Image (cartoon, rainbow, N blue to C red):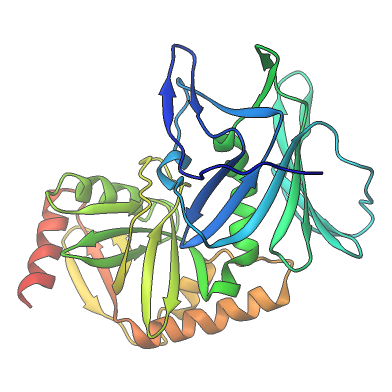
Length: 323
């Protein structure tokens, strides 16, 4: 099978019904500094204007294609489900054979229930794969279409989780902002206030919210960096920017704003539970423990009890600007 490759910088054309990417041969996204190249032919990418798109912020040109995925519309070849490694409720599951990891993702339908809509074969080396999109998408003018946004929503998340540890990084259930050029990571369980605080930060001039729900932290040389991801929470905030990580903040809502420095080992259990390692991979799980321990050794952490209003960000700005 032969593919044609064009310039990976993608342009947008708006019409009444959808957004088209001009490049008909490949699409490249970069998440957490990791380049993923999607190659395809005899079809085009089409996004519905009425739907929310986050992946478009992560489309870029570049030369470091760490992962290459060939996209085909249609049924996959026969494969065995004998050796199941992991299943995440009704969203996705992973199998293993002698040469591949096989990811299945699902789409729920009120009449038909859950059905498989993506099957991805990934080489054991975790550098290339092929995804089959089911069923073949509708045609427009004789050309089949598929959605990069939909593909990345679940499958992209799984792929990044599968390989991120090989790039000295971890996906963490957290929010993050850039303040005065420095990254702050806000950690907390659901309802701890990540989205609330992100919305408050979003109103502040000169502050960039990287994400309100999922952030990538990577160690690059001797420094740690935070990256936004295309998987936001209720706040729908997703930036492709990065910043050096300087502070880790553990959140809880309170009746007054307080900021207390933490020891290096005290918050380890909490941050480990917020990580997304590849639970089917011992190497990834082991890396998550070591990475979190080293992260808390190197980056100062704090316990932030906050009032969920403007006073919280004013309090934090004053603390970190003048202390």
